[in-house]
Image 1 (tube, rainbow, N blue to C red):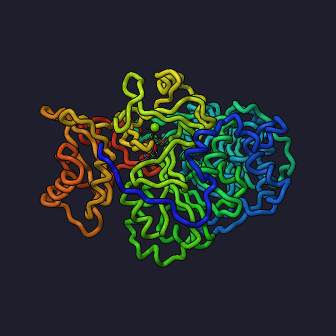
Image 2 (cartoon, rainbow, N blue to C red):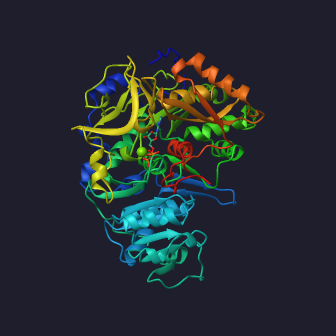
Image 3 (cartoon, rainbow, N blue to C red):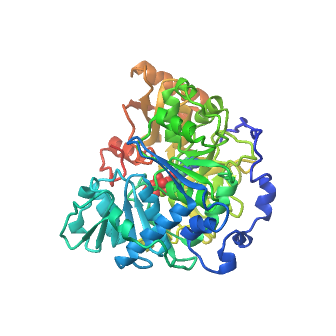
Amino acid sequence: MPQVTERIPPMPGITPNLENYEETYRTFTWEGAERVFSWAKTGRVNMAYECIDRHCAGSRKDKVALYYSDPTGRDEAYTYDELRVLSNKFGNVLRKLGVRKGDRVFLFLPRSPELYVSLLGILKIGAIAGPLFEAFMEEAVRDRLQDSEAVALVTTPKLLPRVPVKDLPALKHILLVGAGDDLPQGDGVGYYDYQKEMAAAEEELEIEWVDREDGMILHYTSGSTGKPKGVLYVHNAMIHHYWTGLWAVDLKEDDIYWCTADPGWVTGTSYGVFAPWLHGVTNVIRGGRFDPREWYATIEKYRVTVWYSAPTAFRMLMGAGEAVAREYDLSSLRHILSAGEPLNPEVVRWGLKVFGLRIHDNWWMTETGGIICSNYRCMDIKPGSMGKPVPGVQVAILDDEGNELPPYRMGHLAVRVGWPSMMRRIWNNEEKYKEYFRFPGWYISGDTAYKDEDGYIWFQGRADDVINTSGERVGPFEVESCLVEHPAVAEAGVIGKPDPVRGEIIKAFIALREGYAPSEELKKEIAQFVRERLAAHAMPREIEFRDKLPKTRSGKIMRRVLKAWELGLPAGDLSTLED
Ligand code: ATP
Ligand code: MG
C-alpha cells in the first residue's frame, strides 16, 4: 500500500466536543455513557421521548426543533413542544386503529413535517417504523411491505398507485396525507385522511415505555450488492447516536444542523432525526430534489452551522463549479461531514478551497446503525482515509481465517461486537444475519480496508469487488479516486474483468465532465495517468465511456450492475437503482 503523507490539520475556531481523541478512546466505556438519558433515573425508555418530550420540561420547550421548506413553497418551523403534541396526536391516531407495540408501520412519503411527526408517533406507541424512499416503484414497495408484514402505512394519494394493496394481506390501514374527502375503498383496507384524523386526536398520550432491546426501526439496505436486507434496530441505539452526535457530528446547543439524507436511508434517521434531537439542536429539513443553487440557498437561509451530506452530492456541487458556491453566503458553516461512499481526496481539497473547511469522512453501514469510524475535528485528516474508530468501538483488519493483520495489509474490515446501535436482526433472514458473525466476537462488514501505522483506516472496496490482477489485490476505490483526479473524469466505476492471463484485468467505466469528448487518445491518456500515479498493475486496461453510471438512489455506484453489463449477466434486484 502507498504511504500517504498528505495531512490537513484541525481548523482553528470553535473548540470541538472531543478534544483529545486518544485519551477518550482509552478511557471511554459504554457502561458509563448512559447517565445522560432520563432513563438512567426513571428506568423508562423510549427514543421519541428522549428526542422530543424530555426537552419540553426544560429550556428547549419553545426552541425550534425543525425548520422545513421545499420548492413547492412550504416554509414552516416547529418547536420542540409543537412536535411533542403532534407526535402525541399521531400516536393516538394509530392506537385508535388498534396498532400495538411491535407492529410495523411504514412511511412512504416525501420528506415533509408529516413524515417526521409520524415517525416520532410510531415510536411513542412502541411500534416499529419502516421508512421508505419516496422514489420507490411498485416492486420495491411490495417487497418491503410483504417482507415486514406492515399493518399500517402512511403515504400520499400521489404515491398510493405504487402500493399493491391486493398483494399485502397484512396491511390493514392506510393514512393518506392530503386526501381530503376523496378516500378510496376496498381491498380489505381502511383508508383515512391524515389531517382529519390528526385534527380529531387527543393531545396527550400515554407513552409506551419499552425495553432497551425492543424493536424501533426497520431499515432496508441500499441494495448496492444485492437484494436489500431488512435491518432491525432497538431503542438502545440512542446511546450510540447520542455519543457519535457529540464526538463526530460535534453538535452544540446553538447549532443549526442540516443532514441532507432522506430518512428512507439510515443516515436520514440516525443522523437526520435521532442524533440532532437527542442533542436538542435545531434541525433543518429541505424537501425536493438535489439542486446546487437550492442547496447553497438552504445553508444561507437558515445559517446552517453543521452540514452532513454524501460524496455523490459533494461531487455534483464540485461539478457545478466554484462560481456557483461564491454566489451564496456560506460563512455560517463550521463543520462538514460525509458518509455513505468513499470520499475522494480530490473532494476534500475542493471543500477546503470553496468552504474553507475540511470535509470529515465517516464510515458506517445500515447494519451498524451508527458511525463506526470518523475523522474527528480534533484530529489531522489524511484525505482518502475514513479516520479512526469511535471511542468504545474496536475495529480490526482480519484475514480470511479471522486473524488480525498488521498495518498496511488489506483484509476484512471487522468491528468487535457490542456497540449500542448494532442491528439485532435481519428481518426474516436469520441465515444472513449469522453470516456477518462468522468469526467469533467480530462483525464482518463485507468491506475491505487497511490500517496505517497511525491507526487511520483506509477503505479499499467491497470484499466482493476486490480485483485480483496478476497476483495483486487491488481495491476499486483507489483506482476510482485516482481516475477522478484526471480533469476529464467526472465519475468512475471500476471492476475486475476475467482475463485468461492476468486472472482479472481492471476495467473502468467513466462519465466525462462537460466539455470533454470520448476518444481513443483520451482513454490512453487516462490509463497512463493512473499508471504514473498508482502502479502499472492498477492501470485500467479497458476503459468505457458512459453518459451516466448506475447508482442507487442514495448515490452509490452499483459495481454489480457494471459487472453484469460487462459479463452479460442478469443485474439482479434493481429496486433501488436511480432512474
Ligand atoms: P447493500 O448492503 O444492500 O448491498 P449498501 O452496502 O450500499 O447496500 P448501505 O448500508 O447503505 O448499503 O451502505 C454501507 C456501505 O457503504 C458500506 O459497507 C461501504 O461499502 C459504503 N460506505 C459507507 N460509508 C463509507 C465511507 N465513508 N467510505 C467508503 N465507503 C463507505
Ligand atoms: Mg451493505
